[in-house]
Length: 352
Image 1 (cartoon, helix red, strand yellow):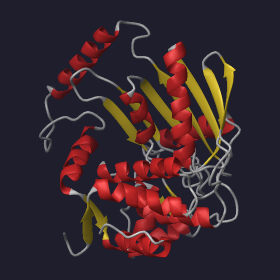
Image 2 (cartoon, rainbow, N blue to C red; image 1 turned 180 degrees about the vertical axis):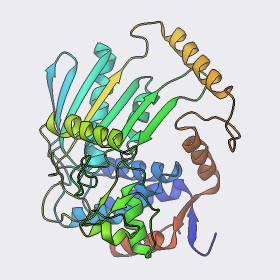
Image 3 (cartoon, helix red, strand yellow; image 1 turned 60 degrees about the vertical axis):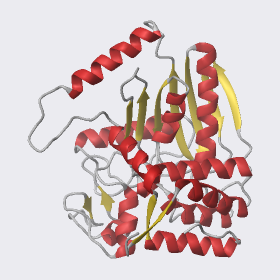
């Protein structure tokens, strides 16, 4: 244990976080879903989407901005398509429900498209496609998000960082698990940097006047983050708003609520899940063999200077997960203190 962090096992952290949400009125099953989503992010090294988010989620529950027991509904609108109304539930609850509906429909028809409205910030996007992966399917997850990026050529935030996640199974090799935001820097890092009084790297953000800045307070006071890859990232962020917002009936065009700052209205985030069998076109065993061949060929490629090996998307996170499952999840002191305070207020002893 370092002076700046504490270590806690995921077996202890998950039920502790779940009990915090149960204390705010979430049913046990839903509280477990939220806790699993958050802790898995920490295990995989995506700490900006881990238990750091719990206090903000709890604040929204306390303020009555999120339905504790949302009236979730799934309406089948075509042979292989479902429209989900999340009832203003927590993102992890709504997203888990929608992905479950998608997996069930894909088992029946081979492919499923699930559009979701009235959801919330749903944490690490990989969690949803990994659910499909565990069930043997290929999956894609699209979502929009509250304004954080400008359109190409703009200087004010309108589009979300809106992560895209994709999972594809393999045979004996590591599966393909992609989870990427539309910005170089996760927005959670901006909030963390602001809390710590730290700068962010150059070239990633503009202040309210459109000038480059490394001050996270400039971003939070009307500035904006920048998309990865310039115009390409901006175009993908716009696509995420179309797929997540326009298509579903959720908020879009800069109207998605900010989970940290909009404390007077629901977020109305929109998602789109695509789930399908990997053996639609070739036998499953052949698909798995071909994926394994692709992975092995990739890993045998000549390496550039500074690289010891070539990894599959998601492989670094899997290794981090294995390490933290053995050694514990490191929590920055400030995060641990906030969680401990939440526990004290709820009568839930912290395991650290």
